[in-house]
Image (cartoon, rainbow, N blue to C red; front, side, top):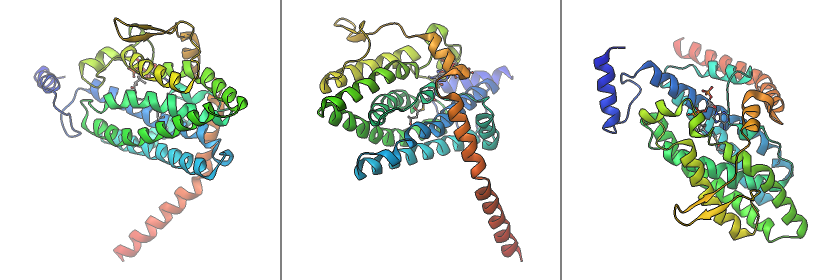
Length: 311
Ligand code: 3HC
């Protein structure tokens, strides 16, 4: 690449400027953004599946309505971020196919089963809570379209987290069976939620470049720690125990120190061998195939309209 152009680009990044679609950017920058945004979009789409599983089983009309609204929001987040990838010259159909054929990555967290209604609460509380920690920082990313998408998405994530935490707080005040159901969901989702932030910094091959170009503004470990610090007091507030005997508050650093993450589990899930990877891909492929007639009808309708308008 032309060193003068690269130097000018890096000066713009250092000055905190927003890089826009028509601006010159290094191919590596474009590639990194495409990778990150595509995976983010895929995560939103696959993320609908674990929750969709409980829409017909919600315990009340109110719970059903808020869960439907949340799942619908996730679809919108996915489409919104796919639009963002298109500003980088990507064809979203290529991305769809990468998800369908299993070659694309999406967040590991969505490869765990949702076994009880309490999982809906814990997913809203932990998973959307983790997403808020991650996405509020991504709202300051150097790539304009991505940063702006995060601003709007974070507003909706806050609703997701609140509705989830309310489900948990309600169960925490409920019968012993409800309390047990909640604690079981917390036990199953706590560690996988910490894994959402990615491998530890020393094992994160993309972080250095993303930090240099101010796409990431905090490291994986910094965001993970921020999430733990936020969540421990919330767990205490509703009387659930986080499944980590090593959790302890360090008054000096003001951090809740936590135990070792099982990175072999993380990499197993990332590589496609998690509890639900095959199920999620099968569901995504079935939904895509079942939607073939809709795509054909939309194309036929568009062709008819354009024939009419040019007649
Ligand atoms: N699940 C699956 N793959 C993961 C992962 C996870 N939790 N964490 C890391 N990886 C992958 C990375 O993609 C990378 O593989 P690749 O080079 O083939 O893409 C590899 O593991 C090494 O990780 P790195 O730390 O080097 O990768 P990044 O620098 O990209 O950091 C990230 C990973 C923190 C997830 C970052 O990509 C990111 O912030 N992405 C944008 C946000 C996002 O995608 N969030 C996912 C959840 S979306 C969500 O929760 C929706 C909400 O509505 C519920």
